[in-house]
Length: 437
Ligand code: UDX
Image (tube, rainbow, N blue to C red):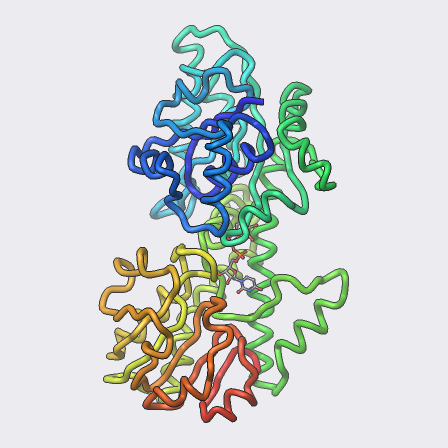
């Protein structure tokens, strides 16, 4: 099977690389010449464990290549995936679909007869039909006489675990309404059937909805346990015990029940917002999702207050060490990270902030002006009045707490991911606060 992948962002690149690893011939195309140059030298523009190796291996095997030229990528491809960005549009919270439609229009000029155009970008309900209309309108305009099919194939991979998620998904969702589209997608994902990952065929609208509803549900689950954590603090319960007890109920499940500083990332904030907008537009308000968005935003602000409280009500002139600023571990992605609310709030109150993050500096330097970047957590904590763990990188999961206390001036430690045992932290001489315990 020959596949073209439009867009070498997170989803596009991971999908393209993994499809080539399935044995398909994949050409990835991107408008950004700098990205193509980077990829051609064997490096990935994003940080994702294992991706570079897998990419090189498939390039060497001759199954994977990169180009800036859509016509070259689309020539001979039975399936063309659109995996371009759908950022939140400024002003109204809608997903900005201009990149998707631009890709569809350009594709109409260059694709072969019978191509299946598959949208992998997360797109609001109704978009796939609009992609079909866009292509048809362009074909009418140019007088090209070719047939094509559309399909929706949302992606559920998580950053930092992208390859594992792609190769061993819980399910593959395909919205496809013709035999040919279903056949092509079934063929593409055939290697996964050996691993017994169900490929589920639905209508276009259902596939689009499954993606948004899943992400909104997970964001709700996190936000729910975060609010439970706040209540636990008031009534003297321990949210870790509560989450474990809840999660053992098979109907609830243990995943995504870790209380923390609020969800961030490239998907949950954007997708919850877009789903809420879709609901409003269709007079079917997603009230729970709207509340989740508001509660999560407020939570990030409250986390800064938690640190300020730990410092006796003021951080003016204090030094704060921050461990982890990316929205989660194993990524360099800072999008909507709680750190982007917490760190500026501390600086705004007069704190000096030293940040240690294994991968966040590249993006973080522009996003967090005024912080000092330090390679080593103990160095960041030197003479600090307090330390805050925002992102649970492995490097911060096994800190020597006595050593940490030893290099600090003050004794406050806010563990916003509940990594440490409170008794152990106290034995190390730290005044320890966490979330929901
Ligand atoms: C998410 C979805 O999991 C994935 O299916 C979808 O395709 C894209 O969005 P991702 O954003 O990469 O993936 O990360 P994820 O691991 O889901 O975490 C999202 C956020 O929720 C992070 O900020 C994380 O710290 C937070 N989180 C997650 C919690 O606070 N508690 C949890 O229990 C789980």
